[in-house]
Amino acid sequence: MVHVIILAIVQGLAELLPVSSSAHVIVAEKLMGMDPSAPAMTLLLVMLHTGTMLAVIVYFWQRWRRAFFASVPDFRSFAVALIVATLLTGIVGGGIIELIEKVLMRHQAHAWVEQLFDRLDLIAAALAAAGVFILVAGLAENRRRQSAATRQLTPAQYSSIGAVQGVCIPFRGFSRSGATISTGLLGGVARARAEDFSFALAVVLTPPADAREIWRLYQSQHHHLAGMLPAAMPSIVGVVFAFLAGLLALKWLSRWLETGRWHFFGIYCLFAAIVVAYLHHTGL
Image (cartoon, rainbow, N blue to C red; front, side, top):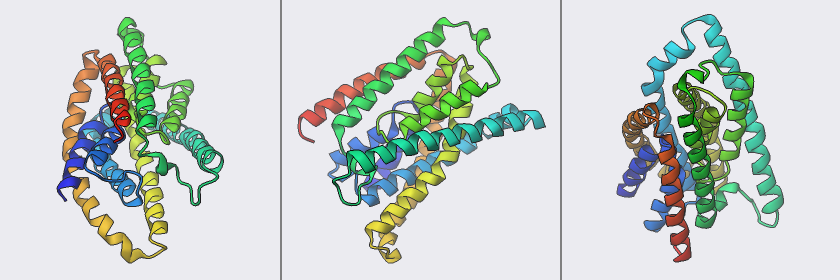
């Protein structure tokens, strides 16, 4: 239970910052002698995401009401953007997962992309890619006049955000929030609007991710529900702690976005990539 609480705090603090919570949680799990690719651990990870999803709803609700629910046209535009972006996430992310599981892992029995989640070399590469992406977007956003940014998302903008989110799904280390907000910034979206839309997408994405990991655990228990109970109980505790830590992280993220320090997160991801690559080199 102490391990679960530690992981929940790590998840909550990192999930809503563009630094890849999954990479941080996986490294913490390996340092504590756990197997991040085990079905019970991947279920715990998505349940921790559920805690941070609840934090997102609580923190952003008033902003979302003003931005997306102020009028019927605003809500209609938001709903269309959310649906299209989520569909593109499913198409791109599902396609990549199918490619990995059915082609690259075809020689493994019962292949799941989650089996790669303990590969620190892959995580280091994904962190480095995310770091470069965030750094470029932050520097570009700092050079652009804020008045030139769009408040209303265009089809091209929300479609590109949804597609990039799909790329993030199979790769631990390629920060979902970092990639989606950076895509918005590069596309000319205002900082606050890019942040609002990115986390609204997270709320939609979390339940399907929960369902996938519950099904994977169910299959690993040979379709016996009784064997799932020991894994589910610690996850509930993790949801609570991830929720509380997530609220703190959100306040920090919003302040850094508003002061134009987005590129600093890219620098952090590059540093984290070096650390993870070193841990992989040591044989962790």
